[in-house]
Amino acid sequence: MGEGEVISASTRYLTTAEGGGDVWGAEAASAGRRGTQKIVSAGEVPAPEGVAGLLGVGRGGPVVARRRIMFLDGEPCELTDTYYPVEIARGTGLAGAAKIRGGAVRLLAELGHAGVRAREDVAARMPSESERAELALEADEPVLELTRLTVDADDRPVQVDVMVMPPRGQKLRYEIRIG
Image (cartoon, rainbow, N blue to C red; front, side):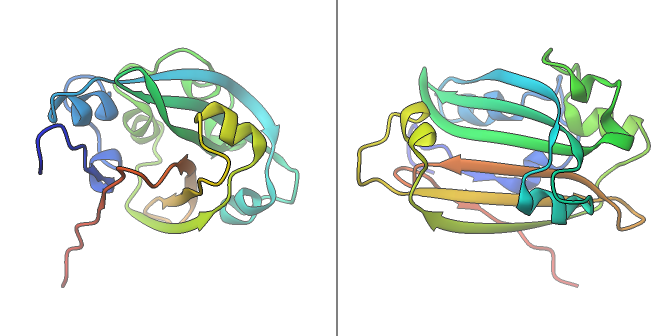
């Protein structure tokens, strides 16, 4: 890893974190950078089309969503929307805008919904106007959209993350256990 280079490794975000759950902050700090986040909104929303299918709810059915903007050294670098089934998240810290002590992955496990498998899909596309503005992108700059589905031991969907980021400077790392 080059000096100051942040490599995002998905496996770090799928397990309970040491020291309170701020994986992004720790990942950035390991590269000598400052990673912060702002929770923009949280609560029940109609499921977006792609998310509805992944969570197994009807199109527009209710889900709990947490919308965040991630910052690297004070600059916006990623938009992250996380969605949960209402049966799991309604009335919990997942439905609120406050920081979750120990992180969302830990809270899901405490609620009996520990993730055991995740699938990620990454696509390049042009951003919406709001994404362009929130990420301070140039007019012709594309984004990467990473969609992660996490399921529990019963193969039940427990979380969907949709992350939108500019490709410049991004390094995504996947470690796969074989056998």
